[in-house]
Length: 64
Figure 1 (cartoon, rainbow, N blue to C red):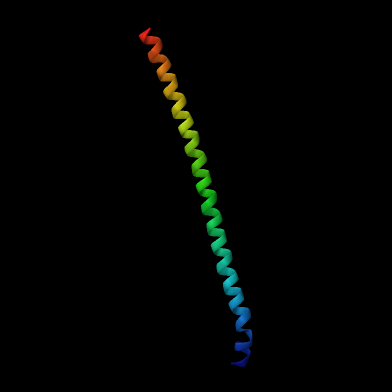
Figure 2: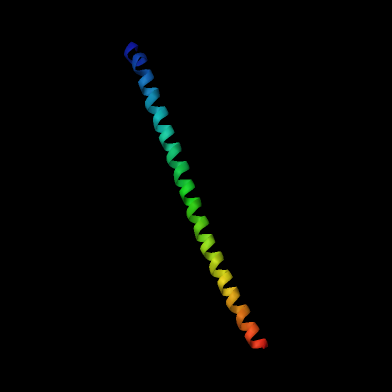
């Protein structure tokens, strides 16, 4: 039992380190995913604005 108690701080350090690494990895991947979604959304928005401008030009040309 004395050997276990003497090794307990090292064991706790490993557990805390593993939990910390897991948390940092999770937060990092979530942040990266959000950035990727934001970029995709901006690309879609730009494409939609371009299509809308093209339709407006066509309507204006037809009305003239």
